[in-house]
Length: 231
Length: 145
Image (tube, rainbow over all chains, first blue to last red; front, side):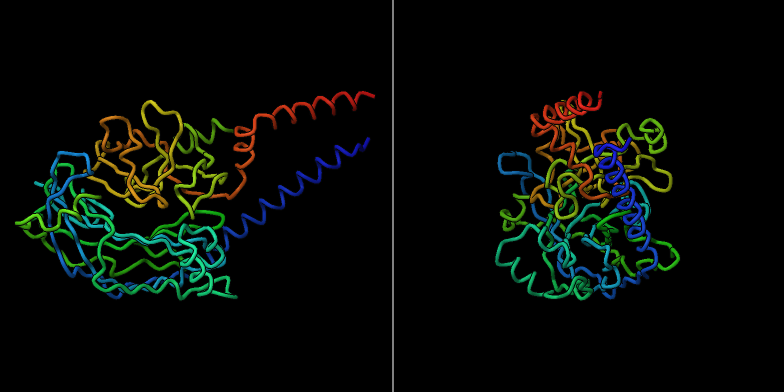
């Protein structure tokens, strides 16, 4: 009794099965691509602590750290056919008052800068203006994978986010470090972050930690008011 | 199967459908996310994409953790959508400035594009449900020969 409906159902279920198997293969192919990300430079270039308000209508005053930094890293090996985007971010980390240790055991961690690097196949999804979009698309014309986008070189980069602490105090904080992270977003499969241990063909991200530094004392005059007022 | 998955991942809803574009270009509307809510090797950390619930709102939100102060269950977490300019303080409940670990339903570990779009279609166009029901009824009637 083969009605057309049964045929339709069978076709559909076969289609979904095939789609899932193909997706699983694509996801598994990530493991075969070696990952060798490197960081050659991560250091702070300028430190500032200013007073400001968390948002325009707030009367609360808090201290905000503005950490400028330089960065040189090569993430080109992370771009494969299953890479949709790479999310790169820099965090500042410091131990809490009274606590000890930093780095892995940091108890305070805040993103100061991040960027989304889309693979050429995901360019049309990026949220940017039409001019920038045209430029972005032209930069990778004819290529579906563009590893050169994974090369980052920033000099004296302003942070995107001025950071503070729930207590509102960050001035003269000691033992602060910057750490570079990445997150690979696949087209299908498992999301991956930078790892500390080697995992078969995936190398750990070495040198992702900056030297320890201390934040300066509060800037006297309210010169950076505008910067601190929006977080 | 849903219950089993729920127990394994320790999350009340281990699979969620993305409803907004605030995490674009990583996640579009209709993408399916697989969640994991256990902290076997490390705590929920900055950079992870988490799904959280806000008191008084029933829609779970998928955003990235950008700040973390303190450790353990009392750590204060702040989230932000990749596609949003500002962090999520305004989305939280009144007087709430940070999330706690218990607000989080799970961290995103797996990703499957587009599959969940059916649910969005059904919830945004209620007439589709009627059409589908009608079609099913018609099939039942037609198959009784």
